[in-house]
Image 1 (cartoon, rainbow, N blue to C red):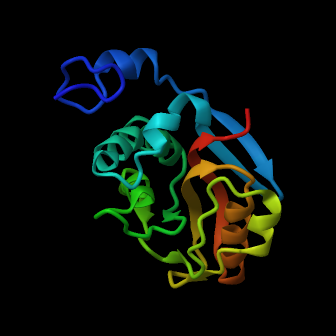
Image 2 (image 1 turned 90 degrees about the vertical axis):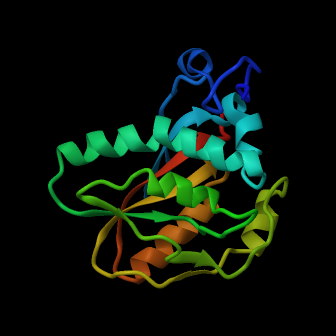
Length: 191
């Protein structure tokens, strides 16, 4: 096989050289309302990889990105926190045979962090890609939550643009007695 990024021979979808040189995390935190959102990359650094989310190769790319970012983050986080933390992905909808957000949440499973797959699902499946803020405001996701109540969670999504989706998800979870500690995303569109 070849590296998806540089086309050199590589068994993993991204070669070691690209991972070490091109895809170093540039972690940032953005506060949206009352929610802190931690992102590992700027969107422009990962755009071509993130756009594979509904293609067959996206499965391997998202799995590797999760291993590089979400897994080390949660391992360090739970090391200093003894309580059970639940991981909830935003709309783990299956398309092209997998749910890309589910790959991110699944990588966060440890003894004290437990993914709750497909518990926060959008009832409105409108595509926000390329749409302005007003369109997003006029077409909320209308999330439905079917998971546990009275728990502490980390909310996970692939990209943050305006932050409206994460805010809406947080509100729905709070109405269901869920304490959202913060959100994690692979990439932040805001430069």
